[in-house]
Image (cartoon, rainbow, N blue to C red; front, side):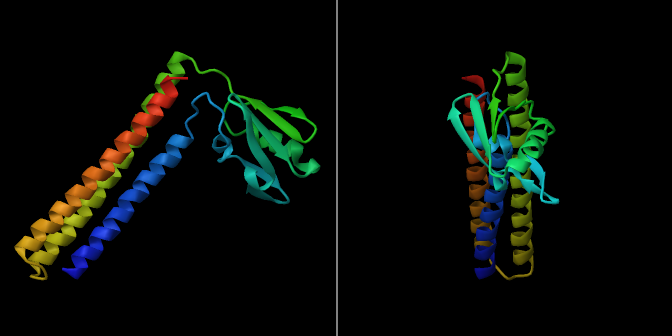
Length: 187
């Protein structure tokens, strides 16, 4: 039974991994509200390599629809500006010295619906990942019973635990999606 218990812990950890990937993907969806995480995917060509924006500048949100990027090294201002423009985020910086200001435009209704659809797609991908993890766990439990390493009762108990973990993970995915959907639609 020790092997099956260990597998349950590992399965739960993997299911939480699928949830954290979903949260990361959803945080990249622009809600029309400024967030410093909006610029997380921006890579700046600096000092001969590509670096994340947060390693060459401070990103703050002074107002709900404004992101301020304070570049530490004056010689990198142009590179940061270029990286933001080329990032396909639809943001155009206004540069004042070493500070770049990014206005977040209002979202129209069609764009909001598109973002919600994309959120649903991300959530479904996460649900599928959780179901694959469940299948892997059930396969291990079946094999353990077939090899007489665990009893039928242990098999049933483990299968029940795996299903419970799956249901909990899918519920968390649904709650995360619902919160993001509200965020996108009610601005």
